[in-house]
Length: 341
Image 1 (cartoon, rainbow, N blue to C red):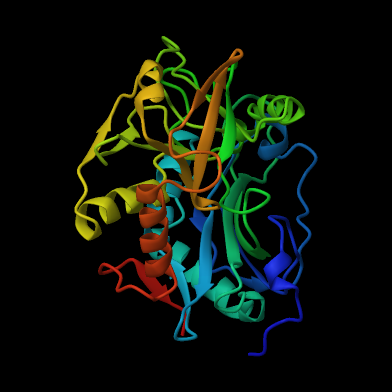
Image 2 (image 1 turned 180 degrees about the vertical axis):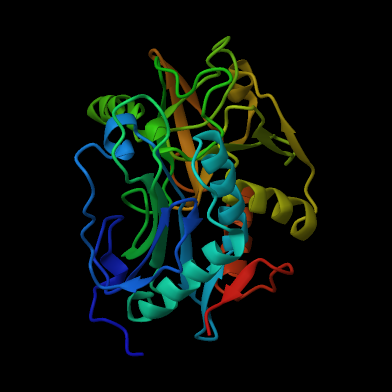
């Protein structure tokens, strides 16, 4: 299939409508067979559960063109598992893992003309999501649901690509203790919008959220996990029950241990430790890993020694190795790459 005529190198991280999307409906206790459609508009009741009580969950993953010219998807099975946990937490029906992966593959295959060519720096972003579609006026779960998958070609998540970011320590909490911070629910992102708009107005790229109970430990940003590197090249990732389990973060931890032979610690990270780290980065599906150059806490600046000009050496090695795996330049661990035939 010939590629679309798009300025791939200059794509931003925005929505471009592609030709097909997958849709499946849940009614009377079962999911229907589902299928591809060209209709991009969703029609639901004005009283739908998603509109009244924010009963919606989503995932994000990417498809790539490899060095060999194959179209591949990165670890969709883990997205299926995470969506299952999100569904259970919000009292929504689970979309079966095998059907999730199949729906993603079918949608990517149908939109293969929008998968950016190798070497352009762009990717095809894949968004599976589910929402309560039937009318709900009492506070309770909906009885009917819709599962959908759409795609859109995207460039870097942060403007300017992988440049060092300036982060603000937020006065807001991202998640509540024993809340929904560990699942990918739309409501988590809705409450973060004011905080990120405020940060942008003040000249910052992102927020650093601290733990909601004590506000002494690093959690994550509104859309990515933190990763730190010590002066002796040990990789440290924050651990908390209210942090979203990033698939990219888990992949980077494996790469650090198994490919680069680095020591890794997954543990609680006190904010007071941040000034002692040699490198810092934000990792997630959209950005892969972006370096952090400066963290500002109410006027107090913490400048990361790796500097504001570029990635630190360990962060760069992690980035190059993981993207090398995704793009087919480096052999992937078993099960990480799903080839779209």
